[in-house]
Amino acid sequence: MKRVCIISQHFPPERSGNASRIYDTAVHLARLGIDVTVLAPHPTFPTGSFPRTWRRIREETVDGVTVVRLWTWQPTSGDPGFVSRMAYYLLFPLHALLWLCSPQNRFDVIITSAPPLFTGIPGYVLRRTSNVKWILDIRDLWIDASVSLGFIREGSVYEKMSRRFEAMCLSRADLVGVTTEEIARRITARYRVPAPIELMPNGVNTEVFRPTNTGKKQRIIYAGNVGHAQDLAKVALAVKSMNGTRNVELLIVGDGDTRECLERLVEVENLTGSVTFTGILSRDEIPRLLSESLVGVAPLKQLKTLEYAAPTKAYEYMACGIPFIGCGNGEIANLANESGAGVIADNTPEAIAAAISSLLDDPDRMEEMGRRGREYVAEHYDRRTVALRLKQQIERMTWTGA
Image 1 (cartoon, rainbow, N blue to C red):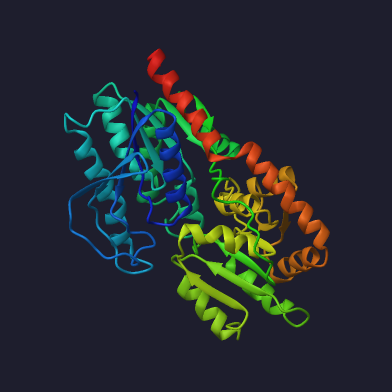
Image 2: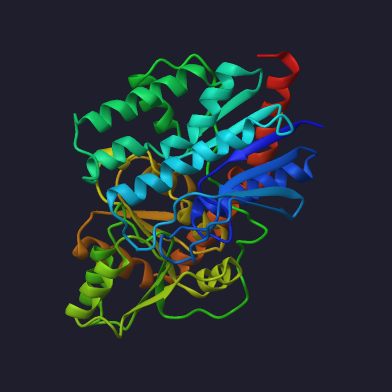
């Protein structure tokens, strides 16, 4: 039996999209006959929402997967400062490397999931010092997004050091997994990548995310990270403009760095009766809330550095049989067009309101888009299918000695 270690900054009970993806991937690999261990920090994200712990290591078994929790710095505020955030990002991979250096913790394959970029530290070191195979799993162009959103100054020492480390990782990995073809194109345009690049999309667990028989409510929904890359303020203002002619609610499910700022906007614009924040909910509740909603929104900011992104939430909307309205260019527009389940609007309240109204005025169209979306993700993006392809890659790497 092949032994695989997945190193991820996020894992349930955290409820981010990447936490659920790592959980589903690990569980499916275990069911397919792989001995899987996940290394993750004690629950931290969204920062400030979990109690801080100083416990160094905690091991448990979750649905056939060994989960090892390792200590790292846990920020206590919702939007931590640079030093606190970097301590959280850096101490965990260093602790993971220390754990992996123990003789009893030997694996055939290590999978490091980024972002953050620094999860690649143990993969890079062990690939140079042992025979372990390394899959570098890239979910996000983290450096590009950080520059465009103003977290890192372009041309700064920090950006140069980060890109240098990313280049080092890409030069040593045995396999590079990417969520979209656009990520692959951007990586190969910037770096030398000798390893094969494989498409490993975010996908969705279609057994969990499926239409329910509950009735529809007069609302649109956003379910995901309330962060800097999402243009949720424009959606809230779109709802304000619509409520002169129709009574529609915006339900925001989740938490993140910009939630407090968004809540202030809602209060200032007198939208408290139209916009509801639920905070983080149990994953089991989400499919029902999605199925009860008329439309899901996936409002990426219109930045060139975000054109690679195909948000997990869009797959979840489709799996639950509701159409989605997206903002932004690139992969999200491709997903909307290929699936027939989405509409892309410009990043203005007026355009978003017009797109929502157009769908609400045509129930038959919404129903058809929902049906197409469900069929599309079930065929192309079910996480068991994605995990099966990953298992085949693991067996190929370890069998041929590539």
